[in-house]
Length: 247
Length: 247
DNA sequence: CGCTGCATTGAAATATCTCAATCAATGTGG
DNA sequence: CCACATTGATTGAGATATTTCAATGCAGCG
Image (cartoon, rainbow over all chains, first blue to last red; front, side, top):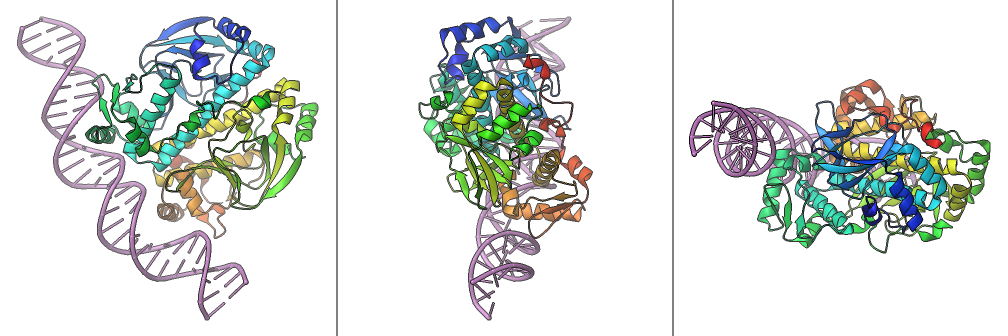
């Protein structure tokens, strides 16, 4: 049941059993990518896409000086490079944060799925649209929040997304991001990330453990600080896929 | 030929005549949205999507204090809210920069198109993936560039995109963005945008005219400053849609 | 003429970065 | 078990970028 999480995390659509099986059968293998290893480099050609089974993937763009901007984080259930199916080359690099299990699906197989199961095709489209919605919220975060709030916002998003796939108790964020990673995702220096974490800790919002995971002591405080509104994740009953447009 | 530009700007795919006609026929009306008028408000429900025929649209998210973060800019040929087809409500607001002509396509019509023309469906998907790729580059811009370079980067992107649809001579950017708009797109204050423009002018890169349009005197200088790499726009032969995955 | 909306400027306050150093935990080889 | 290297976290202090506040300029317009 490698794709089980995909159902939970990304498809606000319900898939039929047949569709689930078809998706499952499209997986040609699963493999482990070690922590901090790269899956794809910006500009590389792709003939397959990958579903995260367990672990965490980072998507990023490097600048001239080798500084890195993280543009997305993928958790179990996410397709990490589904857009590579329609685009010849990727515009960003992808790597594993920790040892991560990936399910590989060749693009030829996706083509068949898309042809045979229009409803599944729409679900895949929807999944990439979710990515775009998250990207937009990241733009907001970087453009309108100060360092501390940016970190808080990212934390809120990750809690929320983990909640969708049932992996978290909202008091504990089990993703081992370094302060450097937070810095690269939030457009600040690691040193400033450190000071922001210190402040978040002093305010009693979170506690960062040595392994990188977080204890969340005041989620509503975090949300307020970050002006976090979960709607963009389209997770509740409110903002789901429009059934009307299916027929 | 309202959709003509869509072919140029967004579809790196070639559409058949039949597909073009079908798309054309899906347009139920065109109308003008006055400058600074809103088309959709964040959270609103949608049962139609809109293609920009002429003019410019801004997509944005407001924060609590009413400050605005622009998350995307749409020019002629762009679908401005195609993702609304698959998502019930929009996660951001959309408004016109200047008086803008929009072609309206009901979601029911899109459903029919998608059912009848799988190839066109893929083209539409591709179009939304292009949005996502641009979003990622915006994240990079906000996260890794300083104010002046952010503005330069945005200018480079707009020149490039206008070039695709054949509307520009690369010496002139005919989009009447206020300094405030640049500020809202680049995550800085209008005052700082003003100072950044002053510096760009003093360096001999651009000249901002009173109507908001720009004269570009040194595009390669701008590109270098902004670390601009056009590949993410998937405009050249290099990074186009993967024909392989079509069959 | 006196609005109005944007652009421009100056000066002080704040946020963030840079550089340089120290610390704490962990792992390694002897 | 110790000495040492490594990695990430932490701190301080000065430099730089950006914001804030307050004011002025400037063009179009009724």
